[in-house]
Amino acid sequence: MKFTSLLAAIGMVGMASAPAKAADDCIARGDLDQIYCDMNGDLVADAPAEDQLVDPDTLVFAYTPVEDPAVYADIWDPFLKHLEEVTGKDVHFFAVQSNSAEVEAMRSGRLHVAGFSTGPTPFAVNLAGAVPFALMGGDDGRFGYTLQLYTRTDSGINTVADLKGKRVAHTSPTSNSGNLAPRALLPGQGVVPDEDYEVVYSGSHDQSILGVVAGDYDAAPVASEVVDRMAQRDLYDPSEVKVIYESKPFPTTSFNYAYNLKPELVEKIKEAFFTFDMKGTALGEEFKGVSKFIPVTYQDDWAVIREIQAANGVKYTPDNLK
Image (cartoon, rainbow, N blue to C red; front, side, top):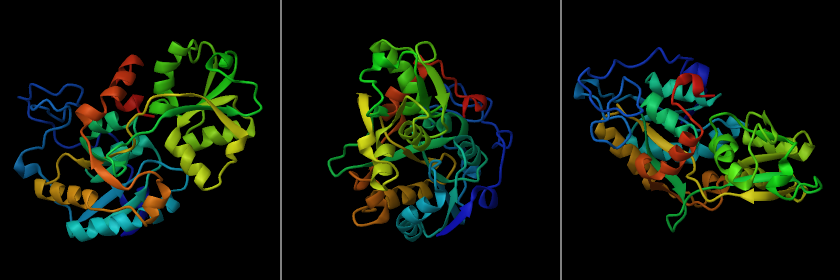
């Protein structure tokens, strides 16, 4: 397994570099881009005609943008070696610089297997032909994370209502727990983002929580799983912050294959995910509380996310993917 940068292994390819358009006789595509079709109604792109299917010699894998990509290359190494063994392919890991770059890479055909974080997953599905099939979960099949609203322990902020007039860090416009979910859920708690408090985009969950600890922001909505991993790596002192609100669980990062891979390869990719035991690996140590990959579908398991995005007026276009 090789660790390569996005620029070296993938190249920066714009949305214009797309596969050939879907057949003009496609009568069902829903929110999918015009180059895809969804005749079976499962909300993801149908596989193309057999002569347009691909079977690359090298599989390119990416994980959602993170603070330190080199660290995650090591963490993913045991799994990617397993992926090589099961598929018989060389596997390259590359560092993703942004959600839009990751979506562009899959749309252009230069990314074959990828983890997309919760909010950007619908963009990957609709703009890039990504097909979600797995999530990290526990032995009991459970999965998910929550939106947690953090503030400093000594901030004097004890309830959501106390955020009025404050400066609150959201992560990025397309982030589920870092932006869309609070915009959809907090009005029910009596506070409307951008109206009752100032929204400042930090760029990532890591930066949001670190900014709260440093006093740069009064509060921040973040993904529970990210904060838990930061605490495990001693990146902040949990005693310095407190949670004043927590949502019901959302699905975690989706793992996807490109819609135009040959079915035989897709089955091998799924086999690699579903036969990998995380226990005792760097991956299992990093993602506490999970032990394996479990099967999911975009239609069912992302319904709550699509509902939140619809409530925010989200449209799945390249310009809206930040």
